[in-house]
Image 1 (cartoon, rainbow, N blue to C red):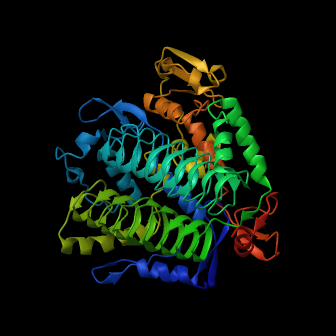
Image 2 (tube, one colour; image 1 turned 180 degrees about the horizontal axis):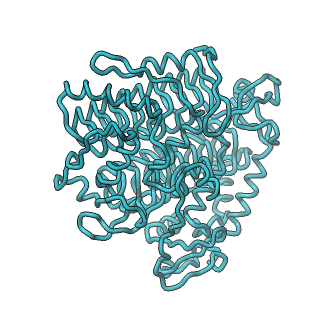
Image 3 (tube, rainbow, N blue to C red; image 1 turned 90 degrees about the vertical axis):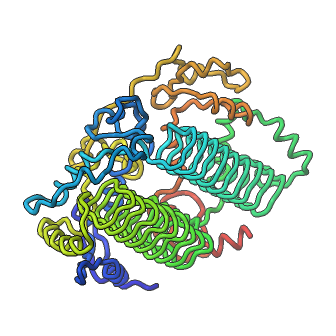
Length: 568
């Protein structure tokens, strides 16, 4: 799918240049909605892809949870909205009940005010759910998840059971401190893997079993400190051993000792530093650019993609999405999405929206609507259609009024733009934007984002112990640790160990961590390559290639053809 550059624009936020192609214009034309027989053209964007993504991510707080009061009952709840916010927040029980109706908060459209002014009023009046979750069991301290059980501080995940401190882990069980896993069972400190079991301290390794310290391995079993292996068994540092010798070696490795484990991590990092790397982590994909793209066709500037086609500027979508641009964090079997922060399955024709869930179509500029269609400027509606600013209209009234509103939005330069960061209910420093586009407080304020210095109260514990005072061996950790707080060795923030977590460490002979869960998450995020493509030559055949390894990095990087010849 060859693209021809039609126009080069300057981003109005960061002043960088970005291109508009003929395929882009075709897409914008295809998704442009029709009302009352008239087509309302979506023009090309005014922000570059990165700034558009940053603006969307400012509307999502995954990992920061707080205690506050339910606005309906006054009872204590766990919420993603901090107590210093004025939003109305309902407990899960109240929000999902029939005790209130979002249509009761309707507004008439006021042509003397801008859209975003009016939407902000509605946003502050309509109650918000404390957390974003569906069908959860015993997972009170988790957010943005569904169909989960017995999990703690897990975020952006579905179908996870017995999970701890995981992010974007799908259809998995018994995983702790892991990132971007699918169909895994028993994982610890592992990232970017699928269909694996009993993997520890591993990266980019799939279909593997009972192994430690893997990198870029497939179909491997009982391996230790291995890299670039395919279908191997009983290997240590890429060297073949007998079953008996391997098991003897493993039994003598004291991974439960934190000092020994740290030494092993350093050794593995040094061991793999100068081993060949593939220019990207794409598999079975054609005409695709960026990274972690599987079984897909015609994907451009996208990341973590599986079984999709014709996408551009997309981050973390699950299977079977097509014909969509500028989307983030969403579920499967959807199409024709544009500037969408999150959506559920079976959605179509969703534009400029945040969190549209399950069986929705023809929804524009709306926030958290479920099983609905034909909505404009609506918030928290369920099983509704033909509504504007949460007010019910007939189909005929809706088709007449929406074009008038779009005309007004064109005058205020709001038509075709996602919600501004200035009216987000979250502070920049608690959103996903801070992870992908980190800024200091002064930078945040200068860019019209919001910042807060609010911090959760310290936990009430019997005592606080510095991390360096913890016993190194898991065998020496007393049950009493459940009543302590540990002071993070990096940030000095206190954190607790829960009983389910201690049981996991003891069962798998792992030391108690010495870093706060937030710091451990940042450590895992730092193991990934930057979400940026560089021009570089293959270190073997010297062909030009695109890669996430910058030319000034010291790793040896091969093109896909040379890498496959070497590994397979």
